[in-house]
Length: 77
Ligand SMILES: [Zn+2]
Image (tube, rainbow, N blue to C red; front, side, top):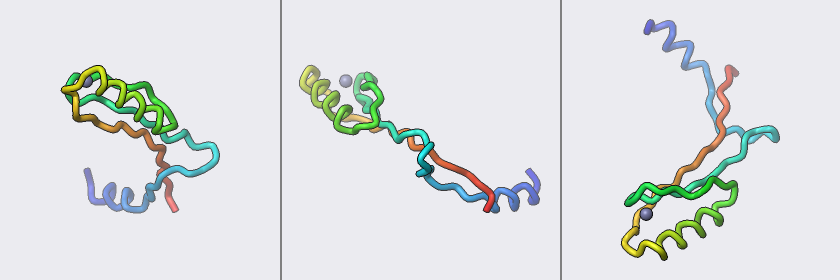
């Protein structure tokens, strides 16, 4: 990679995409013990419900990973 390439990258701006046509932010929860994953939802309450049900059925599964998909935009100002 040349220095010129690095400088060109520095001209770009990156930010979360909050435009009306942006993809929605989505959530999922993954059990860190067995790897099972909830469905994906735009409502965190849905994945929270899945987590409580999963923990209820598997009382030794105490640790989870939140999986967030957030749209971003990159542009040259
Ligand atoms: Zn599990």
